[in-house]
Image (cartoon, rainbow, N blue to C red; front, side, top):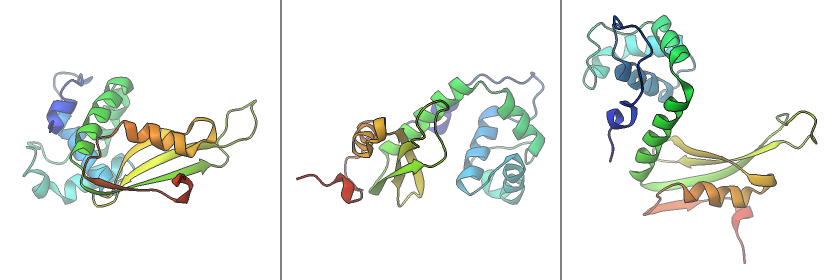
Length: 173
């Protein structure tokens, strides 16, 4: 399996050469914080302060816990496309190491529609790794077709050895 640094090392650090915290360490702490429920940069900083000893078992954090301003500045400056590609690579590698139950569920996002078009909501298919408690995929269901959206989303993942569950809509004779 690819490591975290394999996936994110291609990111260009947009900060000046005098940055105190390593970019990979910041991204790692941010990801860990979000997985533990952080909603914003302040939460990320509070998480880093509270779990500093534990985090230092994995990353150096030579200058202590990053501030909320540091997280905010880094994520404002990072180019979104390379970050999205790195994150997709990471989740794909993570998804390949999955075991157990994977749940699929479609959702209609009421109130979310394109202006000037019919008021039909967006339909998304979410893929959830139950034991890892992690969303491993989300796919737009084409034309409100949850079954086709689920099939397309599943085709992107390696789920060998996993049990895939879905609601009755996915049962076909």
